[in-house]
Amino acid sequence: MISVLTSGVALGVHVPGLLLAQRMRERGANVEVVVLEGLLPESKRSTTAKMKFAFHRDFRVALTGQRLAVDPAAAVPDTALHELAHQWRERRVQRVVVLSGFWLPIVERCAQLSGYRPEVDVCHLDSVPSPSFRAAGPIPPEVRQIWLADWTHTTVPLTIPVSSRPPLCWADRDGRLLVHGGGWGMGTYRQHANALRNEGFELDIIAYESNDLSTDDDGIRYFMIDPSWHPWLDSGYPPFARVDGLREPDYVQGSDCHGSFELARSALAMVSKPGGGTMLDSLWSATPLVLLEPFGEHEARNAELWEQLGFGIGIKKWQDTGYANDVLEQLHDALMRAKPGIPDYARKLMEERF
Image (cartoon, rainbow, N blue to C red):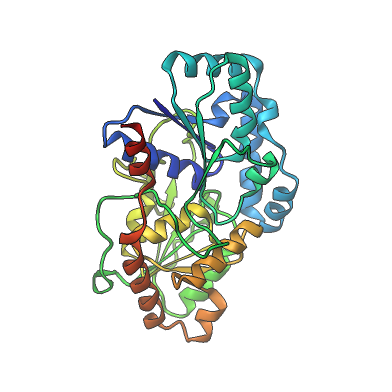
């Protein structure tokens, strides 16, 4: 068995973990996904939920909070650690794939408790170590590090397939821009959405809460993840729906991948801060990124990488071109050329099992 270890508070970590597990199950693997917050007391999870709304409402609070982040592993009760260690031993977990650095001390503690030590992959979604991995300290030499983006070498070494469907060609795109702030709805995307709408673009905006909605513009469609959904209580993709503030949304869980990916496939560009999960969506939809202000140093390096590879452009640079569509088309073409040559991490793991 392979255990994929994610964090539910960061959908840019959790959703790629779900995708990796599904792509491996499709090849016959026995895979589980374990969400870190499922080990925490309810009081700790409630605090995290409140923090997410504060970060969404004020990006300055989010940037400060990132620097003051507390390792949630310290709040995991000993009983949960003993139970997890027992499960890994009983199920003979051969390898764990760590997508959040906050898991590393938990993995080590479980190995000490059980005397059973699976192989460990650290899977980096960002192009340099993210805050959770920096907080974990030096990676032990016996741990294999997997990079889905590499700023140091200006490359995309491996990837996780988001969907088996090929990207839409440029002529088949619907002419809209997808605007979002990642899993926590953070950043300056709402301000930029107003400017882009004033330039005549039709927009799909992923809202984070009902206060984000405005129903007085026919050129804007709003979508949301079900706010009552929590990944530590549900093993599926985030339930997703179009919302208008007038009727109850019909939230649907994707069967092949997360619901917002369909919007990414048909868009001219995604206008977003450059998180690791967003880069993965960009690659597999061949949809360029219009890069907004990053959330920390790791996202700043992500933006530099995507620009250097010809997959994205800063919002100010695009504005200076007069918001030219042909600039976006060139970025789309570069993504179309690059994707077929990037090895599949799920396939790599499967080949190593046999």
